[in-house]
Length: 346
Ligand code: 3MF
Ligand code: MG
Image 1 (cartoon, rainbow, N blue to C red):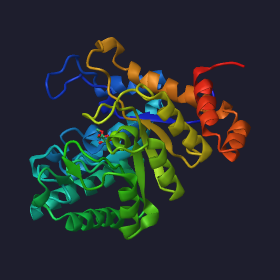
Image 2 (cartoon, rainbow, N blue to C red; image 1 turned 180 degrees about the horizontal axis):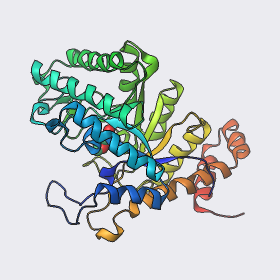
Image 3 (cartoon, rainbow, N blue to C red; image 1 turned 90 degrees about the vertical axis):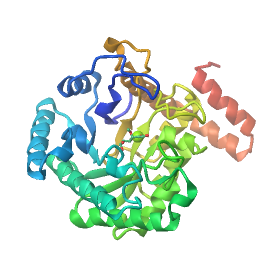
Image 4 (cartoon, rainbow, N blue to C red; image 1 turned 30 degrees about the horizontal axis):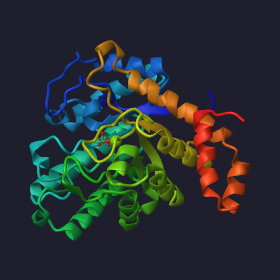
């Protein structure tokens, strides 16, 4: 297998299969069992929500929460694992029902900022300097409920609070156009990058591109990656797949559209992604139909597909690509790529 990429996923990617229409179908894996899966499958990086590190964080003082985080760090060290990022979970508490940083309630907005500041300290305790903001409920169900220009400013102010609280922390915005909201305020990479430039320290604000989120916005994930790369702001990815405009599926990488997956890998390869410490992150759900003993296969398969596509990206006949581009023979270019992906000879 080619490649010197490092892979990560989040503990939520090993789950019990509940969906909005049905309960869990598999017994849970304890946190320590999940950590063993990382080593078994060759993943070094762990993506965390703040309450993946400290379950029920709101019940604990910050001093107690940080003690618990130190214990998690020790368990990571013992297994040779690294925390990639910590993301404040700003969408489950009743105080986030109307949004977090953009809630119409001042006290609820304050809760969201305080909770995010706690997440920054937890990140430090587990040894990482990256905070991911998936702004789940920043948006509306009913257009007139909020002022969108004010909301854009509130998100910038919240990011500024985090930047000021810890001068070494970096913020990665993970855009998504919908779900749970009807319309979210930071739907695309363009919004994430533009928000970074509005903050007090744009050099410490970047983005995380999730394939399914780009597809839900009607965009091509490789173009979203490329846009952020050009701004030197592609600091992580959540690779997965999505079959058109419907509920957020988080299917195994490449499961729906192999060529779209190939182009994501190719753009990463062409821009030396990973050479500056970026992780290849997955955010994939096991199918509800999987039995418990095979409910981590989606992680193994997504990583395998990624590496097979690295091989495809590296072995594409780039001289012929250049010749066909120069001749503007895009029909032939199309077939060159299809034949390459299909492994056709001659
Ligand atoms: C939602 C997501 C989230 C984020 C995660 C980390 C549950 O569509 O992708 O996964 O990735 O919260 O920021
Ligand atoms: Mg994600």
